[in-house]
Length: 206
Image (cartoon, rainbow, N blue to C red; front, side, top):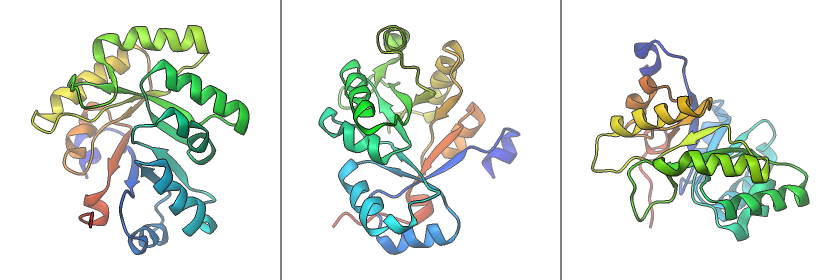
């Protein structure tokens, strides 16, 4: 395994269940998988709030896709970790939702390590100020950082950047690495890897 080769602790395996058929999810549950990642709140509600509601106990659900503020209350009620905190408006919506629901999921700050216009996340150069404002104005301190590297650049560059940022800001969790590059992420200290197609098989978007 990648973690064994790198002589580092094995990261948490987050099974990304986006668009996967229920039969594959059921098989993962039967095999003992307990941590799942979802990209969309509505899809997750249908799966874990309805079809697999009877198997929800003991599971840990992570939101790994962008979160709209109008979905904050639903996300807070369903997820144990929101990995895509990237703006103050969302922080305020999560706090309001937490007051209404009576719980606050763990939070990770998403970093746009490639400075891609089409991608969510805080720019690396602005992360320090963002974290300072979260703490001083909202009493929020994310547990760690998450990134999605550009598809046309070596992932290692971005994992190294995220690891450096985590050290600089004393953050313990690093969510990085997906099906194609989780083996690259582990030596850089990934504590969570988000694996979908390599675990479940190719997705069918039809």
